[in-house]
Structures are given as structure tokens and as C-alpha cells.
Length: 253
Ligand SMILES: C[S@@+](CC[C@H](N)C(=O)[O-])C[C@H]1O[C@@H](n2cnc3c(N)ncnc32)[C@H](O)[C@@H]1O
Image (cartoon, rainbow, N blue to C red; front, side):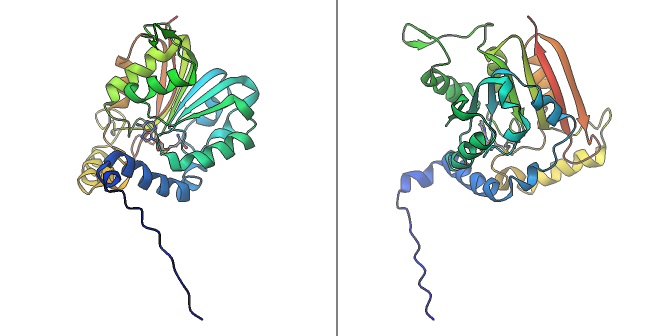
């Protein structure tokens, strides 16, 4: 029997030069095949925190919605998912439906960094306009809750991005965090694990993992982002090469 294999080649050289699009494409492919498996067990009390999420929610980098079943969609008024990898949106829409969000779920093709997120939120209508432009948000914010799960390791210029997210949070609003970070070897971590992070990075981890960085000081970036009323983050697997911080932060009212 002869097997005829047809391969379609997309000839658009400009796309090859667009490193960001390529990065999202290749990560999208990786996540489509292994995302569900990598989400079967989440660190710390994340499931509990997601279950209590309510009001108008922004989820940064929801992927193809592997964590959506952990939310109680009845408690959520509207949910915005900022997911730049277009290829993950079909799965995201399907899981949003299956998790009971109906038309409360708004998937946005954008990143969490302000230059991408703010125009997308503006287009979606959640950011009020001021003279035809997105209003400069100041301290007022528009979201009751912002969820960052396994995403801040890959956003560009994380300090500014986190500050931008802080500004989008209403006073008294909550941020739910589950992120892997630089090993805290000076306190509860382990020096050997910190060294392994350097080794993995030198071996090309960020390149092969779609821009994911192992050595980010995300806890410090979050602390410095603004005034918090409550700042409760715990290390999970502090001695590991990929330790997580998990918890909730409440913006000062
Ligand atoms: C490891 S997955 C985590 C998905 C989901 N949050 C979870 O925990 O199941 C990281 C996700 O972040 C997305 N991502 C990458 N860069 C991003 C950016 N700059 N802003 C927002 N999301 C981004 C990726 O496309 C991917 O869907």
C-alpha cells in the first residue's frame, strides 16, 4: 500500500522573523500535548484559592484552560483570560464552556505586559475610555481578582508587568499567585538547587521552554509592586530546583 503524505508549507518569511510569534507557536504546541498532564497536581493550596475567586477576574496566561475546572464559575461575574498563544484558544474556549462559564468568559489574544494587555482590555470594553484613549488607571483598578499561575516566569520585563497588574487591581482586590522562582538558598532553600538553576539556564532552559526563566525574583517584584494589605506567599518545595511561591496578596483599600 502506498501512503501519500502531504505537507503544507506556509511561505511567509516575515513570520519567521517574528520571534515572539514563533515562541508562542512552539510553546503552544508543547502545552497542547503536555499541559493537562502538567496540571494534574498543582502546588500548595492553589486549588483552594482558585475555588474562592469571585467577581470580575483577570487570568494571565490561562493556556488552554487546564485550571478552569478549579474555579467556581457561579462566583465569577466575568473572567478575562489574557493568552498570547493563539493556538491555545480553541482548547481555552472549550474548557471555559465545560467549566460553566458560558458567555462570562472573555479570551483575549494578548500578553500580561501593559503594552499588550491595556489595549486588549480597552478593546474588550472593560477599561473605560477617556477622550478616546484607555484611561490611565491610577490606583482605582477594574478587577476584583487577578490570577497568575505559572506565567510570570515568562512575561517580558516582569517588574513593570507586575506593577501594571497591581494598578489594574481594585483597592481591596486580591492577586492569586502560583509561580516558580529563584531558589531561596539564603533562607529556606538550598545552594545546590540554586546552582542547578544556573546550570539549566546555561543549558538553554529558557530557549526550549518558550522563554520561561528559572531564576526570577518574583516574590520581591510582587512585594515592591505597591502597597499590600495582606501579603501571604509560601514556598512550596523550597529545596527543589523548581521551587514555587503560592498564596494570595490583597491590595490596600
Ligand atoms: C506554563 S503555561 C501555564 C498555563 C496556566 N496558567 C496554568 O497554570 O495551567 C504558561 C502560559 O503563559 C502564556 N504566556 C506566555 N507569555 C505570556 C505573556 N507575556 N503574557 C501572558 N501569558 C503568557 C503561555 O502561552 C502559556 O499559555
